[in-house]
Image (cartoon, rainbow, N blue to C red; front, side):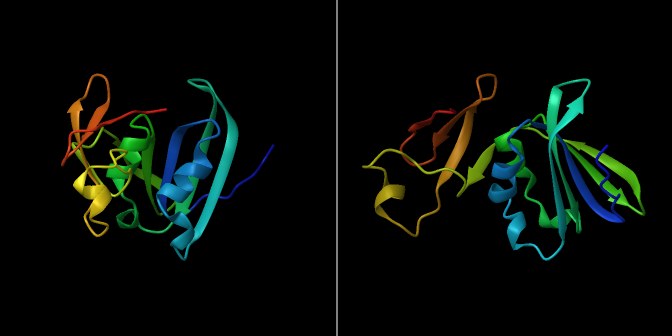
Length: 142
């Protein structure tokens, strides 16, 4: 059995789809934090079969929950203080995301003006559809 020690203060991202933890690590820029990060891949899960987890030993304020909710709103965020889970946060699809994805429309103002923020707005929550704020180009999830 693999043994990864608990954390005093920080957060655990749980219920990550198996194989997705490394891309989440990069999306959240966890490599830029000066703290301990443990990535657990393909852990056994009653609910999912297999899952990934990320343990981060630093305050939760370093985490962008909107990006995480956009990537996968089924991830659970457990906040740890004094070796105990003090709060569990569920994620939702954010209404708006900024500089996470890029507009594919070559004629969009955000493609032409490089310093302009890439902003996408949730237009259909049931189907998880986001559209560019400027040209309404639809973002297709792969």
